[in-house]
Image (cartoon, rainbow, N blue to C red):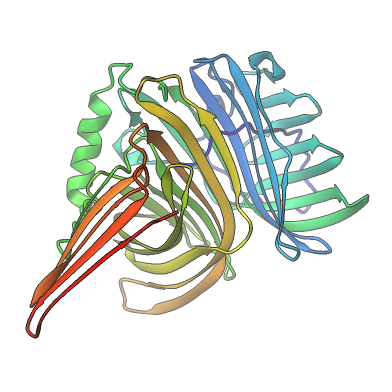
Length: 418
């Protein structure tokens, strides 16, 4: 789940009174450069200076086309302004990675240095600068760590390490002045060998077996409807959530061709430990059609694990969109659509106690689009009839057919979708 990015940065200096999380099982190689097909270091943050900002930035290299990317986007919540400060498709040598046992990255004027649990990052482009220290307040976690921590992508694989909550301290130079800030942050480091241009390149099988067993134990299949769509496992829905009570969430869902068979995982940091939720149902409440696909912008999530989580998250700022053309006869492009917003919901513990939750979220939707673009067929049965919906982005139409037996009625509508 989440974003192909190129993280910047870190020389760490512990303030004398800094609070940070320690992890005795930490392996120094988790921070270092792995020399694989793809690798990125990513930071997201919600910060308060003179205004409310959020930042999403990362360093990435990929060896399929020998390219490097610096993702660097600032969202001004107060003025609803997006600053796209990234540099994409550069020569792979633009990102300098040094060190097997620590983060030591340089990308032109941007950089990142450090070791868990403290990192320092510096992003600089187009006369805007962000420099901040990240201090882990939660432990670090591999996605599906208990199942080996290896995730398949097509016939390739990757490892996904994240820290759901960090303290962020630093300064931003924007609008011609320096502004100090504090806030909360998220950090991830992902590496592995997989292909977007040729997803069936590789020989990964065992992670699928491990995940199939894990999914069967956590499955949460809905039979209220049947939805077939072109959304596929080469994309993802990702979100990082920071709640006002200090809790945070990592959320990742891999779309399947049958929407009622969800596959995803969510981790809740409750200020003490990280709880896993593998039984997830999600519903797209609203969205937009964009460049050959459908992007959900408002998502309802209900998850079961160590308790129950229910919340609605919604993009309500201007989005930032990254597009990458793919070298394939069938796959057309990859789209990363990211936007911060708000979230409201609740957590119900195993003791039945309910805690209301409200906060901010960073949502990222990635879709790998084929030459057939987005298509969807959905049938929803009712006690006295059914509703059928079919749409095609390529053909630019949507059909809705409704049948009621008692009282008898038939409704049919045809419309363009863009």
